[in-house]
Length: 327
Image (cartoon, rainbow, N blue to C red; front, side):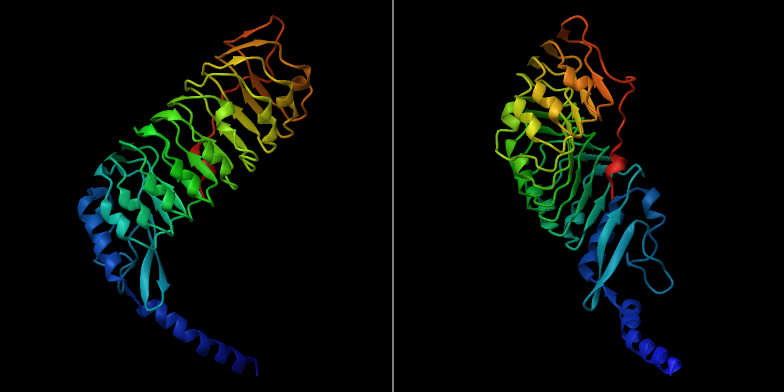
């Protein structure tokens, strides 16, 4: 009886195996990947053998390409081509891969803008373009990628303002925009992102105040890490910042902020790293910070605090790599 049951199971699974083995890759995706292949450097092309990116006969799928069977066809769902010195503009043919869930072209030498056609990739969950030489503005069409959870655009040459359309990404958890040439204010609309855990806009040319950023009631309910360092932010630290009760890292270094450090900030239950250095803060640090059970590091140098105000911790450089947040 056991042999009979196993035989029935194999018979039932056989159509599934045949479907995977004999499905053809969607012509749209074959055409798009071959266009990309023709535009890339030899370091990628040498490992992309054959005409079918999903594999054909004895040929395996192309390196960095992951496919899935949908109906009668195979489609490309992931494209990872990073750290291979791709030179030139963003390959626009990528935007024809409409079933992509992951696009990773980080650590290359891509130049020029991200094309507005990026908004066609409705199933995209991870977009990683960090460590390139991309320029121009961040296209508002990225706000059409409703499934996006991770957006990495750091270490490029983007300019202009952070598009408010990024607040239209309900699933977004990680937003990395640091080390660019962004100007203007950080949109307060980002505070409506219910799942946002990590926001890094450090090392840009941003202005404005924290009060403006958190003006929407109930904003940033899931935010753990907030990096605003190395910009031109002004004004003080509002007591309302203590409403971001999940905050663990607050990085305000090297801005033009003034005023006192409010006692309310010490009520953040998970606060672990607090960077206040190289601003224009004055007064004293409330004793509650020194009694905080989780606060490991507090940097205060380069301000106008009263004498006797001391830092907390060993003052090691906090080095959080983007790779720690990749999925």
